[in-house]
Image (cartoon, rainbow, N blue to C red):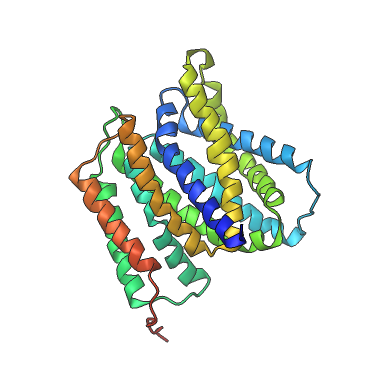
Amino acid sequence: MQAKTKAYLAAFLVALIYGINYTIAKEVMPTYIKPFGLILLRVLGATILFWGLSFFMKKRKIERSDFLRIFLAAIFGVYINMLAFFKGLSLTSPINASVIMVNTPIIVLVLSTIILKEKITLIKVSGIFIGLSGAILLIVYGKSITPGDHPLYGNILVFINAICYGLYLIIVKKLTQKYDVITLVKWLYLFGLILVIPFGWSEVQEIQWHNIPSNIYLNIAFVLVFTTFFAYLLNIIALKNLKPTTLSAFIYLQPLIATVYALLTNNDSLNTIKIVAAILIFLGVYLVTKSNTKPIPSSN
């Protein structure tokens, strides 16, 4: 199998895992485990798995000059990203969260234009405005069927998570070209673990393990093993052979997967706002990822 094909397959599997995760994690939070507590368990489990796996592989030292970039990647890809997403998901619906995350390609384009000085076109600018209008519509008016949810607050946090994920893709890209997957991710999670301990420790202590049903234990295992360990491995593998903008485009599969799974398990419902917002966001993403040859002239 060619490297590009493997990268596309890895990106698809990441979308599949994340799409299912919206509902699976939502069933855990906040009834059985509060969001920051689940994040601490997730990052701790991943750190143990990645460092344990590294002992069976060839050692590769990280250059001292790269630790700052790894630390920044951990801030946006593990610390703020996960805390904002899981807290947001605990307050909104799986479909709301998955549709908002579709804005990632738009966010990556904006950040790439600012940080990497990539050229931007008129069509892509229109896509940015259309996609973000859909996100604003969903953030403000998106509802949840779960009692006790606060969709507006949750939707805003999920959008913050999308911004952080976009920054993470840009920051970590150079590192993926330099280091193997395990060497890179084990340090990402170690730094992330140090950062999330102060937020999640008290919520972990509150967990009443004896009151958690067996199916919820399976949900927790899925979040720890698949959403964290395998998804991050596959994400790095994909990023080695794909541009950040190309990889981020795979996120548009997540709402489809998340919606089907949430509806099948009766964890969410569709309404006009969600459908209209999704159409606007998908149209925006299509325009952003569409090739165009007429760049916008820069003002000097």
